[in-house]
Image (cartoon, rainbow, N blue to C red; front, side, top):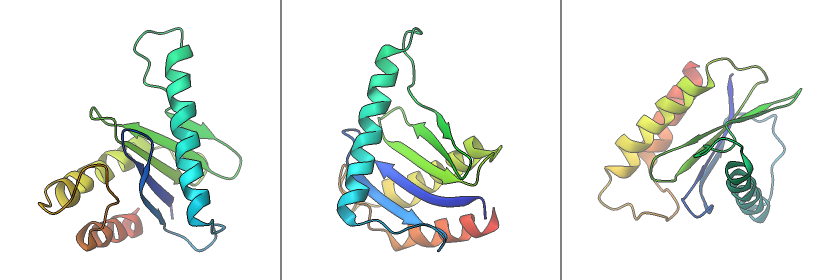
Length: 134
């Protein structure tokens, strides 16, 4: 399986969605997930500020020997963090599809409140189908 975990951060860096797609990941406490999201958000903002290129988009990926972390920041400031197997070559395509699912099943839901945790069974089902097909 290419997709290991997904995090969605609101524009202020708060964790609004987290899901693991494999059992081989260590489980963190709810507080640890929140700290992880806030820490990444802070590093992402700093990276975009210290970049020698104006209007830098910040961190796009972090690679290690055991996983790769990929980030897609939307025009509205939402960040999608995707943890994959190392060397995943099509992560940008995976993130684009996940963003499309988010737009279809979260943003078009009239009961979803912006900046609040995502609670959508349809979104979860579609993610499961998509993650299992990758």
